[in-house]
Image 1 (cartoon, each protein chain N blue to C red):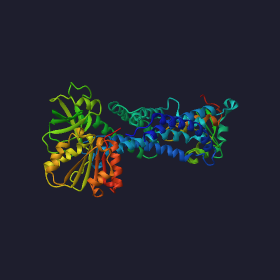
Image 2 (image 1 turned 135 degrees about the vertical axis):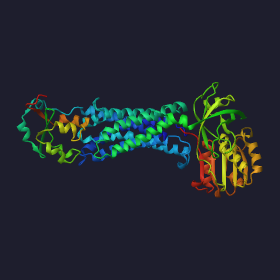
Image 3 (image 1 turned 180 degrees about the vertical axis):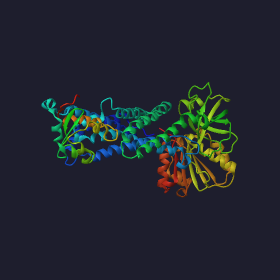
Image 4 (image 1 turned 90 degrees about the vertical axis):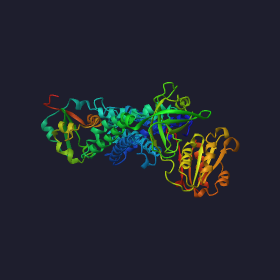
Length: 438
Length: 122
């Protein structure tokens, strides 16, 4: 996640507010006086379009936020689906901020009283006030998503994000009487259809997925890999998955310091077909820190699998770059290759701060000795600094012929993207897994 | 993206504040003619203003002169002109299909006021 200076944001915002306060009234006056502006048709249409588009995008974003194992695959995995959700939500927010302004300014030629009455009508005119309520609720749940007041805590962000359902319901209540005024039943069916889809999505998310989407497991082993990193082994029903996919894990250990009953996404480190699931966990927050000491024998729920990071059946020439806990999908893939046999043409660069943090290195070294065509390179930041073009050119001379897949911290992804681009790898052959959902 | 969204929300409240400030400074109420408030318009006089070029209507006991507004109304003039010279409360409150006019329209009415309809108890 890119961090921005709050001071700069505040000062720039203050300038924007002042500029608007100064500029809007003259612009308004100019518009009112403009010949032929009497009907305000363009503004009225823009106001209606922004409202209909904004609410439609919000409802679609809600539908896309539903997690059903397998449904994310056509979209290129859950993370890509959520990027679409994120952009739709942002576009919806901008459109719905514009909507009341455009709708009220459309009355500019009718005088200031008409404009203000459109924006803030008498209390009895409830559809507009319900619209205001929807917009305020939207601001409440969007503020943490866009870190208006600093980076939010994950569970609080998630809880606030549930208000999106309330905002959508209020938005529909606002739109129903107002767009029903259109001389066509299309508006009715449009809102009814989108509303039903969104309700079904929310119903699945809040109620049904808990019973139908989750499966019961027991954490049988907690294997320390390095300080602050463990690998959990879970016994339970077999889970069909591909290497590199992730699951939502909900631990129920009553002795946990944090995160009991909370679901968090973790990448599977086990190969498909293993008798037990394995999940590598690094201390990256309260919940994952508590999981380092989870009690063997305690219960947990698993939902998934999700994601489509690694091509499922491809043995085309590839370069995998993993950093820290970002090695997990490649560990799963290497274990799968080890189990399946056969030849590949894959280079794997293991980026770690120093040998003590390369906790999967010994196992991977053993695997590459057994898998034909899998080549392992270790790169230690403390000794060699960041990954360089020279390092890549020396270890992977045919880099431009390969598909490049990167998983790790954002700086490593950004650096790898730049190095791959400079080496002639087309953007379409560069894939990265960014686990920062906020 | 985060910065852009913060700008949007700030700009939104800035614009709302501007609209409110401008409306308050410009005077929230349309200028009302004290004489018009007391003037009584008979149904016959009302009926004498029954064309698009001279259009009065009575709404809830108050008579308005919409002559200059007819071409500005969002609908084509043919929707409004049949009510010129007539008592048009029902048309105003239902727009012909059961939906009332907006608060913005309500706020504009005083600007067109001519007087009260004689013989109307409201």
